[in-house]
Image 1 (spheres, one colour):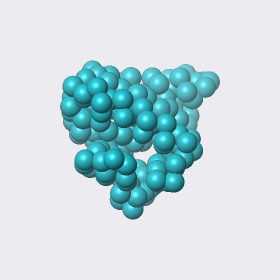
Image 2 (cartoon, helix red, strand yellow):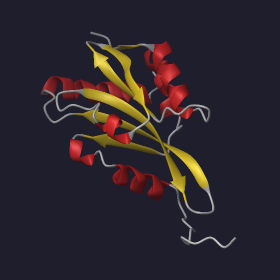
Image 3 (tube, helix red, strand yellow):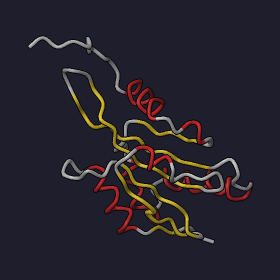
Image 4 (cartoon, rainbow, N blue to C red):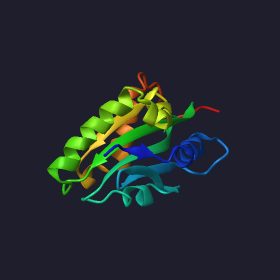
Length: 155
């Protein structure tokens, strides 16, 4: 069976997360059979974390504010989730879907916005314990290069 996506809803969710005029900080995309849909959007990291069950495969896109006392900026992280209880066949199909996404297959045209590097970090997670905001921030900080903040600001 061919995997398909809900292009309009996924594009809408993606743009909502990226918008400076939106409070939406994250979106989650899950499988409904062989169809990938936007299953949830929100503003709290704990709610984001709750979206990923042990027996599911999903993708997540999240905006986090980074920076120091001199410079604040929004950074984006894209993740692929394969829960520890996902069966062997579905787990294997994820790698095929992942390859298709990275090859900009026309079917996955909407995901190309993610995969054309509109995110600073890409993670592949398989354990719910990896869903820690500090872990995400650390990965974004590493990807950001030099960090000149002193922790103090003279006014």
